[in-house]
Image (cartoon, rainbow, N blue to C red; front, side):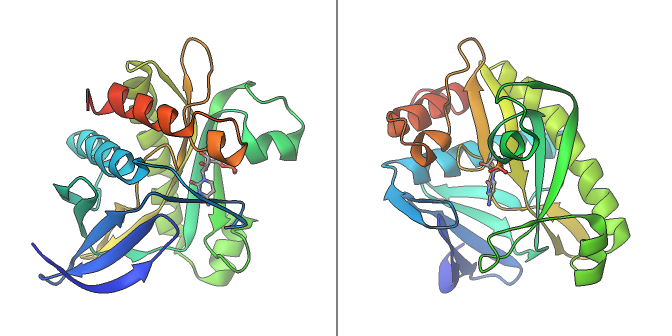
Length: 236
Ligand code: C5P
């Protein structure tokens, strides 16, 4: 499969049409942004980590019955995917209080959550991805009630698969973001699953091994991405 025209360039990825209709190629960049692109930088090697790690996790999820857009890895930075009509909802699943949930609730970061918390956000760069509820989804016609029900069920299923899988690699899955889209008359998991889109803490020390190191200027950003790569993908 070959790259054709550029369809879209995002903050961390470029999406190209593939030479067969119904497929796209995701190219993973080293560019990093945070706070709705107010903060910009580069994390050397991030594109390779995110591409390879997403491939491993999409493959594991597919084996367990999660429909994903991933088809195959093409290179260190490229994966072939089904072309989705992306639903403009970001679904976040949380197992431990962190980030915006700590701010919103006043609970200290690191507080365990007994039952996973799901949140929906409106995927809109100009608006800065505000949190929305199912009434807003209906009002904005982002997805049907049936689609939202499926997305919520699938997000919980994915959390139930990813959490123990990553725990066996010594990683605590604190929270993560998912995107879904339509293709061939059904819904699929899209985008990526990586230290850009997940909070991952060392299971023993709670050391942050994800994009928060970049967002919060904690240093050791590249090293954290490489450590996650070693644990999830294997020795480089
Ligand atoms: O910032 P917040 O605490 O709401 O983020 C929750 C989770 O969703 C984090 O793992 C973060 O990396 C991810 N996220 C994302 N893309 C966004 C917003 C959040 O990947 N636009």
